[in-house]
Length: 133
Image (cartoon, rainbow, N blue to C red; front, side, top):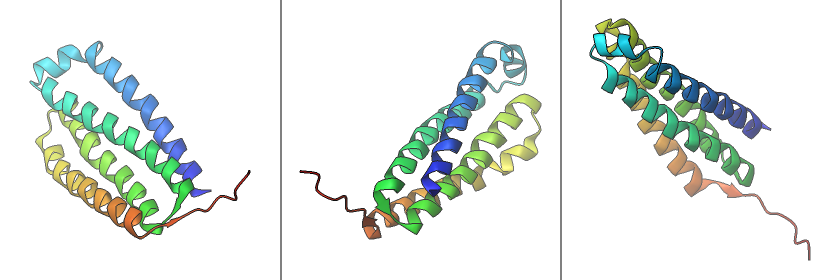
């Protein structure tokens, strides 16, 4: 059942990243250029997009592979996405340098999440489906 929540969060994150990408390239373009943060915003979008797809895949994988580490990796990835991309979004729009100090924490969490995924796949128990033939 937990995979359902991962998939719901991934679906919401997908809608959010598409919306933020569109808003950034249209409504916020002048602000991003004025703050000299277009590249920063694009980095946030890129990492947000990539990890949203991975998160969706983890939700599906969780239904095939029982692993608490895999689930923990997904939750850590969500937090890493929020801190990494979220801080870059805020830095891009406000140009408040404090947000740049949060970004590395998000990046470290993303790395840790990948290590949890690695351990979860390695140590997880594949769900056996009965033969339907």
